[in-house]
Image 1 (cartoon, rainbow, N blue to C red):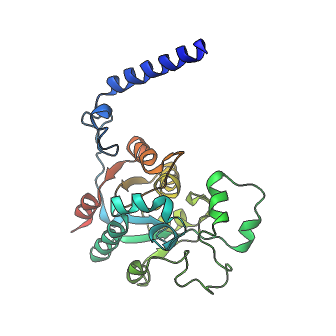
Image 2: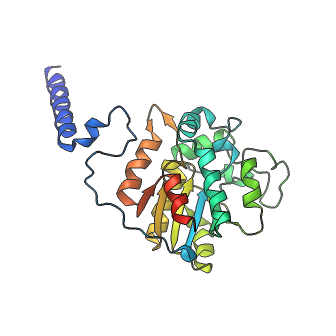
Image 3: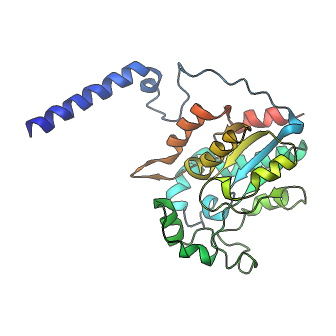
Length: 260
């Protein structure tokens, strides 16, 4: 018991020392998502070349973004706080007004996907709650208004005959769909990334696009994530966005950069 108490005391002391050392984090405890007052990382120098730029949105679907979706109890607070639904629409509207290419990387599951022999934790949850389910890869029966469908307010932008909707990704990243191919075929190498959810599909897309040689700016308030006892997915993603993305912008900043 004494050893356990001693180790616990050491852990508390170490934790305090770490908070003091990083300064800005301690000052931002009232808002865990606030930018650090004294950042250690260098600022972004990403400059858009608009003919080579596209907006990529992951999973702009009802199951993630609507109170009617199966994940709302987990992500609703974050979606509401970030105004994610409204911010994604602002990006779409601005992209169309300024002739910026838009790509959608959706997430669908077909009946055969429920026969997978092994799954990660979130895969188990998604399959158990019927998230993004479709009856078949060859049918849209029951698709309209289902959790797999796109948010209604986005459809005028997505179904304009210009938006490129990639084949579905199956876990988190775009490695298994044709998003990268579609971007390359349009001579796109700069991506403004938004969509759901922050620490899962959005972050996984950021990773892969960076590895593929794209310059990636993440729009931090046009995404959101689950907040559960195991952790705050949005905070986890935000830290990694800051560490790895070429830029992290707000929606207002992204819109200003693509507006001619």
